[in-house]
Length: 108
Image 1 (cartoon, rainbow, N blue to C red):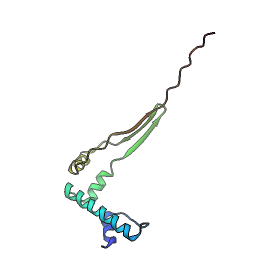
Image 2 (image 1 turned 90 degrees about the horizontal axis):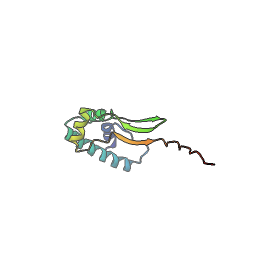
Image 3 (image 1 turned 90 degrees about the vertical axis):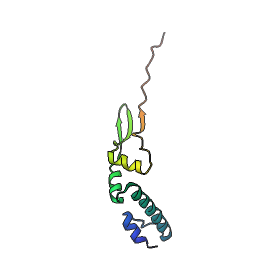
Image 4 (image 1 turned 120 degrees about the vertical axis):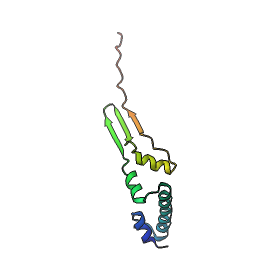
């Protein structure tokens, strides 16, 4: 199996992997791409471009921290549905800052 055409199709590089591992990884990735193309009826380039628009943001404030992804676009929803995948959670992580303890007056 020629690895170079697979790498071109996938648009990735496996320069640090040995030839056997690189071939196996490329083959599995190519099969995944073919499944995605058949399920969505779209090109891998278009599907990848649309799904890459989904981002994860981390927002920190004195009151705490939130890790949240962007809203799902209608096209992303269609792709996920075609692949029978659930939409990832909108809120990934949420931490509130510890509240300062109130000091109580000591009785004498």
